[in-house]
Image (tube, rainbow over all chains, first blue to last red):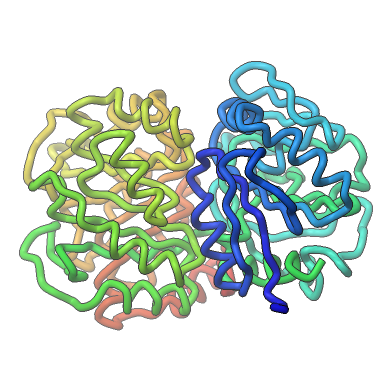
Length: 217
Length: 253
């Protein structure tokens, strides 16, 4: 018996897939990459990476049968991690280049980041760069989550996105960040579902520690 | 508080990290992998690799260097030099890059910006501009390490490229590059004001004062630097501390 945790990574052509694999491998995980849902077999931990456009991503996910795979995996209660667009797809709808249906696992819409800050000044979109994780409005604690042993207001992680999820149920929100004076949803968690808007695979040692946390959830 | 990005830039020729002045007169510095790891461990926020010969000879030999770095470096990596098509971009992204920087190919055929951006997203599509001042508050975009004129006005070219789908601009002043005389502040100011996407100022960092002047511009939140780091004239720790002392947020690694 090996104690090496195994993750299954869905490959639907996302550019960051191999870097997610590299980061998990670096953290001691065994990686299984599947290109078709039919080839997935039994899954311990499922990871859905993502970066880029919502429509292209959700179409590729559906074409490869990964939508049903994600839904049925989540029903098993085993750990699930979505990254960036892999998080956005969990929601009902996205307004990126038209109106698109997501997987509807979490209630909410994905909308464009405002091009002006709270004071009405122009701000850059996409939101690119390092930003600090803050506690959500609910102030829910981070114990036994991706952020176990991490501290609010002290962790910088890497974001790159033009659209942002707006969860209907604020209890789904695990962390926010502030951009232009507004809260942006940085991570969600409900039961066995964890997902981040930022890229843990690109967030240095802080990100790697979150990946290690996921491997023991 | 403004979050700033401090980005070491590694110019690559064949297997070597190199450094020049005004993007020419290249000198070998050492093994790029060693420097990439060092900058990651010292708290770099991203890395930029530029293959300085690829656009001249039309070949991509940088992917091995990127693959090796990506196994150990868990921050964003941008790669430029010789990327001419969606397939070139895919190859580099699969090697471990997060973003591709395009210059020559975009100038020759601007549609390549839209093609790469549609395929991989605007966040992965960086416009690399080599700017030379040609008059008062006027800069022309160059290619091939500042050797070939394009006739494109830098401000107009930036606006057009953003419309075509660029998500970020890497703005190198050929006049300042390698001189350690400071960024071309007027250039950075004008480009970052006209671009609705982030702009990385590159070329000329010599002292900590140069850094805070550039980052003090309202729309400039990212700076690249090369020889001050390669030759240990400044450390990433000094650079980040000075940004913090100027009231900005710089990540603690």
